[in-house]
Length: 70
Length: 431
Image 1 (cartoon, rainbow over the protein chains, first blue to last red):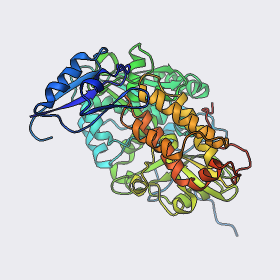
Image 2: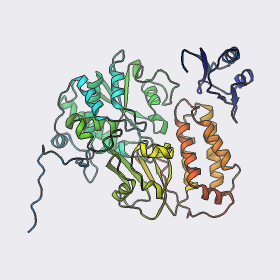
Image 3: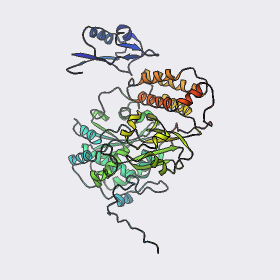
Image 4: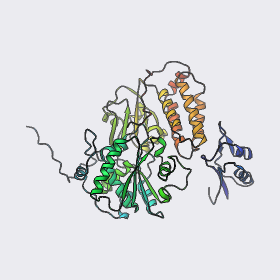
């Protein structure tokens, strides 16, 4: 089982906390909006991803569980 | 001795693959075709069952004509099988400045569109249907209002109540989720899906949003059958389609062609080039530039354009004459698209504005960013909006940088290009 991060681009207001909390998979563009690595997240990284989701001030991040393949 | 003029009987079978189809009977002055003439030309709609209609559309292979090219039967089925009271929305907003074909249909043959609305309502089991037209399209609204009155007087649409909705004159207002949002009392801005309109759309009901040209094709498929429809086009992209030609052709305007027609013949059909052309913008402002010498050999099919990284979209074609500058035109369209962002998503708002400014500076011979930087921004905004607006803009910009690479180089060094200072592409919808 793995998970995928998604950002709601309308809700996101470029606070940038997610990239600080989860730099392994989230970087920021020139204006501070997150660029999310599309690779599925598994194992120990899920804890960091969940933290980024929990701390987003505009609740714009979503961690979706993926079952089976992909 | 002169030959007697051929008299075409109203029910005489047309020649195989004959054109026009949708534009049959369009008057030279562009006045709307009244109901009695429409019925004399096309005949009345036969009554057909709900399932029969969807099967017929599936057999025809009709794809949406609004830009995305999604198979119509699949959409009909999804809405027909939805939970609730389905709604049909005919999208006639056409906010794309280089396109006039939906307005031409609404203006000239409103009954063909409304036949399609009526059929689509029957196919999905809807009693409510809405025709969405932009506020600035006054002649189109008048034509449809009048046509609706003619139909109501004769109870032509059975159970379906068809109404008109007026939408803001904005490019983004025609985006499917933006249109549904507007009809639900919200702003005409895209929403972050899901649910998709076919699941929960207008009033929370399963909603079929279909471009008006698509619906007009449906009106003819119901009359002449799937096989007739397939006499034109390819197996995967069957039928005829409307194209809007603008820029360097002798007779700009809306034409109906068979899918798979050669670009060369389409240009010839519009009176030919008004002067030698350097490139064509195909697929409108979410499409892309292709060098004239290569595109004239291609045909109007998504399958042929895919290797060039672009799609036919709503089939707007703009010809860039050699006296105009591709750098200037690319910058103008980039600015238009940046200004037409719904303003909701950071990457779109900031990215498109930065790209447009950088392109404008290059066009003016005062570059402050490299082409490489613009390409990086373009790649970066893709897929990062709630809708596909940034993706379309990125595609357009990338194609411009590729096709006009030499001109960009000249501009970047403050040297003169081949342009004589004129501008060609429209950045406002003609009303």
